[in-house]
Image (cartoon, rainbow, N blue to C red; front, side, top):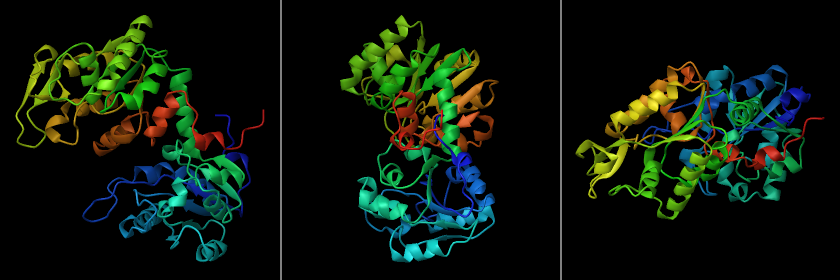
Amino acid sequence: MDKKTIRDIDVNGKRVLVRVDFNVPLDEKTGKITDDSRIRATLPTIEYLIDRGARVILASHLGRPEGKVVDKLRLTVIAQRLSQILGKQVGVTKNCIGSETKKSVASLKSSDVLFLENLRFHSAEERDSAVFARALANLADIYVNDAFGTSHRSHASIVKVTEYLPSVAGLLLEKELKTLGSILENPAHPFGGLLGGAKVSDKVGMLKNILNRVGSLLIGGGMAATFLKAKSYEVGLSLIEADRLDTAVGLMEKASRNGVRLLLPVDVIVADGLDAEAKVKVVSIENISPRLRIVDIGPQTIKNFSEELRKCKTIFWNGPMGIYEKPQFAKGTKAMARLLAGLDATTIIGGGSTAEIVIEMKLADRITFVSTGGGATLRFLSGKTLPGVETLLDKEA
């Protein structure tokens, strides 16, 4: 972590623009927040700034309004939740830029907190617009990036704004980089990777990078079907990435050369559909019907994966083991979550849907670290730089 953080600057009385990632899930019917963990993850930064008398201006996106004002994606509900958590009023501007917003910011006193309205109501945000970034920068004296989950995006509030303000990392961003960096640089061995989710293509860079570091790699979820197909198994109606079969072969060969134990499912749950009435059964990978699809890992695979992971001192997990949104196809994913929560090891969850699962199961406090990233985590573990981190001020040597 060679970037300056809020600890390295004087924030007292300053207007501090904090980019947060409060893109939280909302109930479609009620519009209420169903999981506020991303809000709570940023509390150390917000409270640090409040305690030191900063005038805090929070900026975030919510959903995909595509440059239009969408009332159900206003940040009022998020500001209300943050007000409850902080025990102090957090207002929301009607727009994230403009003369009215400037007035609202000008009225802030030390330790006040104000939320700017949804950044993505302006298409200029996702275009990394210099004009939009300058308008945001004009509201503040200092910029803080605490939005790890969007730091892989070259958006105006993430990258371009840093050209106009002294820019440092928040405490969550620092924690993410240090924790994820530790599994690349000095993980306790044995180190195991547990990967699932739908696509191999999303994880190729990370797979190539961590194959130089892990002792074992366990692959489930939809991506396992592509690996099984690459080994000439019948996978029925399972979705595979035909253009990634050679990639899967190459990854398996690299694992073999590196002495990495690569575990694929030996049995799976197959189904004739994806609805609640679907007929399901357990079959070995040699006996998958052309008319059925893989929906989860099987009981013997759960046992094999569990035995391997119990040997590990460090485990990184990203991606569900099956179509976890359907309760009847979630057994493998839930078994892995319960296993990791009970291990005496460093366990790191790589954000996205995997984080949502352990939070929903109320197991997050038994995991060493649950990343707020998704795409950012995968990019970072691929060994690539994050645009939103690169532009922050370096620490003096």
